Amino acid sequence: MAKKRLFREISRCFKVCDACPMNGQVISDAAPEEPNSYQSVCGKCPIYKRMRSAGAELWEKDTNIEFLLSKGKKLTADEVLYLLEQGATKKSIQHALGFSNPKQLNGFLNAIYQSKGWKTDKVM
Image (cartoon, rainbow, N blue to C red):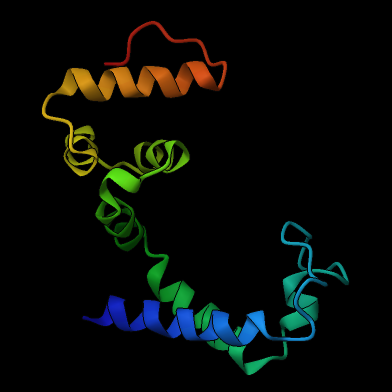
């Protein structure tokens, strides 16, 4: 499967990056043009270029949704919200989380919304 190959490739890249002397000098949310951004610090590295390429292939919306759903009960609250935002069906999320009925998912979603301080009436 091509996706598994790409995930393995990215995993190998991360192992190299973890040992890199530049590791720790990058600020993850820095704008690309800033001197401490990934693009500025790692942009010329062939491992970074390969990881960006593999990531771009994987970051296709359907692939990302499929990958997240495959995590099953290990899905985080933020991942569930992301899945909903990206158009994953509630039924697919319900199945991934192992809920046997929609009421369980709705209760779970209400708990997420409340924990974030969002107004909730009832999740439909």
